[in-house]
Length: 313
Image (cartoon, rainbow, N blue to C red; front, side):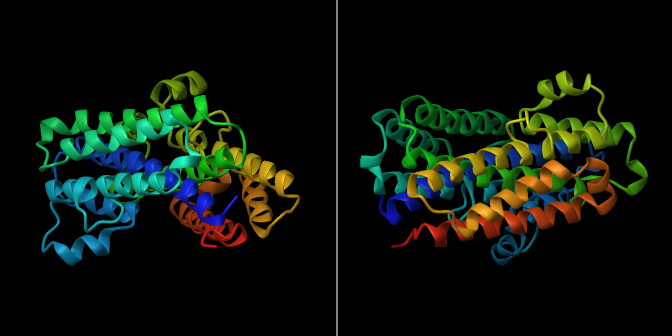
């Protein structure tokens, strides 16, 4: 398969996963800000930091406000990680590899783009945000479902899935980081009812509220929730689950091509580190520091995959 075809599939699914997860990050910010009595717009500093666009936001805005931050994350074309930008990029990559996609996958992609262009044609009112976030999550899920239900389990599928899970791991870690970056009011609030409400909001933002209650009997403890989203291999948005899938898909490519690359060793090392660590060790090390290191290693793997499979050849 041509490297540019692998590149198109990989980035198509990274962009759609990113669009969904930026929407989830906005949802996390909205839910968490509702727990703050001050209603301060400073709450959105942590959301922009976790999305990696704080400095870029400042270049076009003289002041940080909640409505401006939400609009920047949702529909600002100058923000290359806004939901609208990601869906544009995802569709452009899909067009580039159109002949490698099934009809169902292409139609789900095109319908997402058409609906979102209409939905985000103007700034949304606060009352319309929950519906918009639901539409983004629903449409992204339809694309994944079309891929899963109609594509051959070959190298095309492998690269699409690798892109999905590298992006998902990145974004789960960023959503978790919102919790500790700014939205926790103070150290004195750790373990209090305020802290628990914020953790519950994080779970709802990653669609993990009910599954968490099954796994931990509904007791909202910071350590359990961090364990669920980082180390629980049954949780489909956890870092451990993402790396089980990444190493599996890379393993299929190694078998098909008869070659192991540097990326295979990096992915295996990250997977093993997640399997060996206990959540207590992570919390003692510092959750924010752990997540920063994970994001860096995840980015390194993405670059190694791009280089190893000659995405631009």
